Amino acid sequence: MPNNTPEVGTELGLQCFEGSEKKMEICFVPENGTHISEIPWDGGMRTYRREHWDQVVGLLQGCILLEDVQEHFDVYLISESSLFVYNDRVVILTCGTTTLLKTLSEILGSAERVGLKVSYFQYSRKNFLFPEEQLYPHSSFDQEVQYMSQIFEDGHPHVFGPLTSDHWNVFVADRIDRTHGKETVDKEQTLNVYMYDIDHSVAQLFMKADPVIIPSILDGTSQQNGGDNNSNSNSQKKASDKKGDGEKGPASEYEQAFSACAREASDRSGISALMSDGHVVHDYLFEPCGYSMNGVAKGDGYWTIHITPEAHCSYASFETNYRCGTYEDLIRRVVNVFKPARFTTVEHIDCASEAGSRGAQRPADCASHRLVNRVVNDFCGGAYSIQVCNFVVADGAGEHN
Image (tube, rainbow, N blue to C red):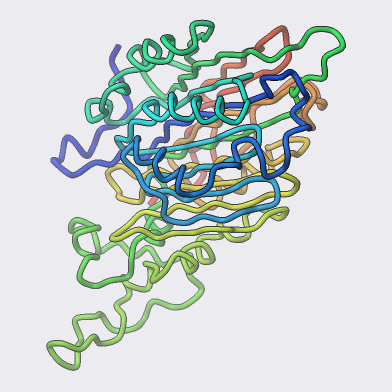
């Protein structure tokens, strides 16, 4: 099936990076039939420390960069996105050409060794911009389904959205016991926002402010001034005005549009203030460009952002399981930070969650963008629903740099 999403990088012969993440969420229950509340807060999957997860992440061709122990979960920032370990679940996201599914058997084996079994498994991802670059078993969704079906014979694949444009793939194996009298766990909710062709002035904030590497990042486009969202005036002299061959002069107007460190990128972009009921735990600015962050939200929630800023394949993603009545305002705030040309939202809402108790899902009303496609599907007799919406920048919403 043809994929009509832009592949500018391959046409121009530029190096392309697949920003879109592969994601696995695996929920567990005790094998002995006791309730998940009986799992100690630091037991279950949290029994395993960094040394163990280093080995797991190594299977997907990544490594752990930062770690932190929170009250409800352990959070890891990895070279190719993020890992969140609760006592009863594991959530892992990886981008690029990582082989995420190759970690599945090891994670399931780890759960079995601490007396846990799978109650719910979900693998999901957006359609790739550069599918030809992916490695086995991620060369196609059909290949991924075949791989997962060998482990979860009761799993089912679904595709949300047009196959010739932006769509979202998901494979679900639901083993939750919802028989009468059983307390279910259908109280979760998750938001994903996948953004493409982010505004250049925003993208530049996630590139290192090094005059040696700036020309290679911009690939000859450094005449664009991306500092309009910086309150400081970019009026200083260019870095070429040096005092000597080995001595740097004042920062150029282009350097000021870049960031010297992760915290600067978080603050100047507005990411630090994005979640009023949360805060940043980890932020990381890659060399020469790229950005990742992990944060905690009210209760036992997490939020995470990953950014590929290069113009020919620019991408940013936002994910959270923060509980609230509606994600509409949060979606608007996220989109306002990155100003993408198009974006996709995925909302997974359990019926007994805070958002689920508000009734049927509806698409976000975002003045800067218009809705072009929406798919909603109920699962397990309405126990939970998934809504996927595609948006493009609205006519007259302002010029996209």
